[in-house]
Image (cartoon, rainbow, N blue to C red; front, top):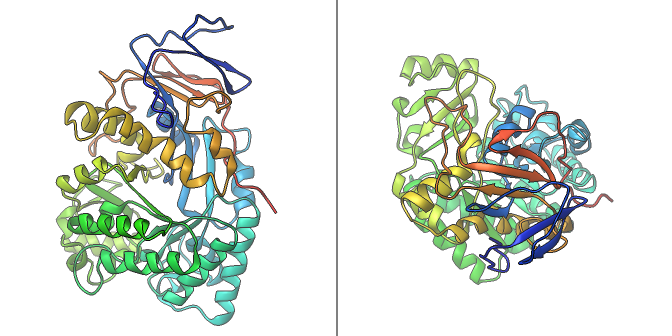
Length: 446
């Protein structure tokens, strides 16, 4: 099944030197043959939004059909170092953005580890700091970052002028800006709609491409209105795309600015909708204050199922996991099961979208989002001659996620074979040991 051409037919696929060398109705021979009778051969899934960029995360993602894992929302403050750390050591392909969050933290000497807890979250930057932020983002783009990552919700003190400046830097390099919106929910004036308007305006004014991450966790019950705004902006010529994950809960750091006073009203939830990752317990007012001082991940049950179905089914919305590192007693299941959940629950069981549409959201659309900035993506997300042999072979009648909120560290089922650059990393549903065919997904360096 090739989402670019619409091909949905029986073919023999020949792979040589990491590329698709043959597509034929005739018999072909090779040193190794995979019998895919009764299975779907699809382009490998491209995850635009995965924070867990470690070997264990890559193993879970391979079992979920992912062949390219990208950290484009938070990103990194050291693009060259980030790529060097993974070169030759990765099960699947990898890539990163230059992140506004880590850059702002570095410049403003914030004490936080991953998310800001001090000045980077709560203080406006000086003119000198703004200049340093822009210089560091430009340097990251010159080092081959795929995009600029922004988490405005976590850097709440960043003025609109600062956001606009970052968009201008991105525009000079043709880089998309992957944005976690400034606000979530429907409590005026800090609504998801107002936050989306901010970045659509920035994109329209600067001509920097815009990608809105996890639209359902920003729009919540207002997600239909956010999708309508994105569709209208696209119709006006603004280059804007979006994504969602197929779950009713999000996850983030409890110490972050997201939980500054007023969070209950903004998200229309209370302590009982927060689950502390380390123990699995639901929070109370007392444990909220204690764990907020400690810092750590919480799962946030805040997205109606009807909203999840709406976004998953919308042909405009890509699929991205927003997966988190797997350290700790428990994590959100999305990093382990997102893609199989869409294929099993929403395609096969609930029939909210067809299989080809689902595959397009996981393969071709993410590749197209990045191919202007990084031409290497023109050979990903497709099954055609000359394309990268990143392939996911699955049983459409069995594929399903097994990761749950109670037991999140479970491999998906029904993903039978996964090839990365022509090398099998999953065979007969089992991980292949000691292979590292993953390559850097990177823009040109200047």
